[in-house]
Length: 210
Image (cartoon, rainbow, N blue to C red; front, top):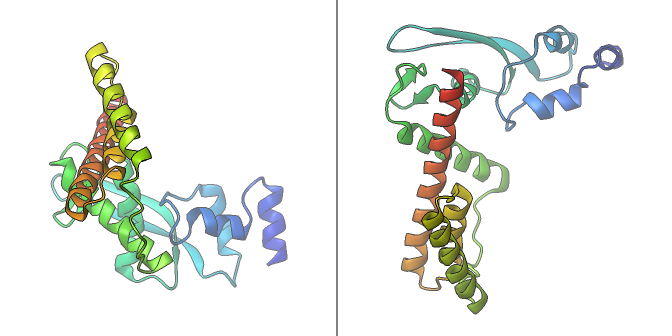
């Protein structure tokens, strides 16, 4: 174990603990750098190990095969999801309808909502069910809602509206509400704007890679 740590660190790579944090369960999914694979295999005590996972596009058959950090505690479906979660960040559509490469993906919104669902599952798994008071409806939030709404309108009129302005307007309008039904409606709008922002980021990234 110690020899493994020393070898990895001497090579300028991460220790076992750092590797588990960066590539393990709950971390942002990413392929393993090739230099880490042999070092990980030498650690006989770690539940983590590199595994080549292959995902095929259900439309054209395009294959994506990479090494990912997985765990002996994961099911085969959970190990596949590690790869699918990473591919979603690369423009793939991996959801209930199947796996589709960037050239054959369909509507982006359902895919992102699937990612939101996975994130909610991760949150509940990590923190348990959360039941906090709303803490909204205070006068200071009503004032900030007007301020951010006015700012967004001025930015739009000037042609410099940013996603930041749109989201902040929606967030502060939600914070200004004390009525549960109205608060719920505002939070749905917050979530919808966040999804639209993610879609815009994905389109921007896809345009750069085209």
